Image (tube, rainbow, N blue to C red; front, side):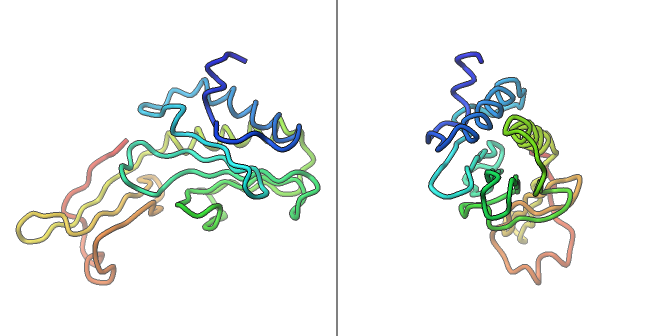
Length: 179
C-alpha cells in the first residue's frame, strides 16, 4: 500500500485484525478515488462504539453536518457480519434508509477485504452523485430557505431556514448544481 493511502481514514486504531484488514482495504481504494475537492482530512475512522465507524465529510456542503457514514460489524456482532452505510449527520448511524441511498449488507459470509471493497465502492459512488442547492428567496432577494438534495433521487441531505409547510408548496427560486 502506498504511504499516501495511510492518510485516508485516520483518527483511531482498529480493535482487531478484521477491522484492520477492512480499513486497509478502504484506504487503498480511497487512495485511488478522484473526487474533486475531497482530501484525506475529510475522512475519519472511529472505534468509540461497535461497529467500526467510517465517515466522509462532503466538501461541497460548507458548514453542514451532513456526511457519509459506514459501520462494520464483525461476524460475532449483534447482527452477524454486517455493513451499513448512510447519508448521516452528527449522530452516528442513526438515520439509515433501506433503498438506493443506503448500503445494507447483513448475514453474508465474506472476508473483511470484501466488506472493505463494498464499503469503499458505496462511498465512491455516493461521492460521485450530483448534489443541488435549492434556495427560496424573500421579496428582497434574500435566501430564506435552502435545501441540499441528491439531484438524481430527490433525497434531502440538509435543509435550513424556514417553515417547511409554507415554503415547499412552491418551487425553489434558484437551483444551483453544487457538484
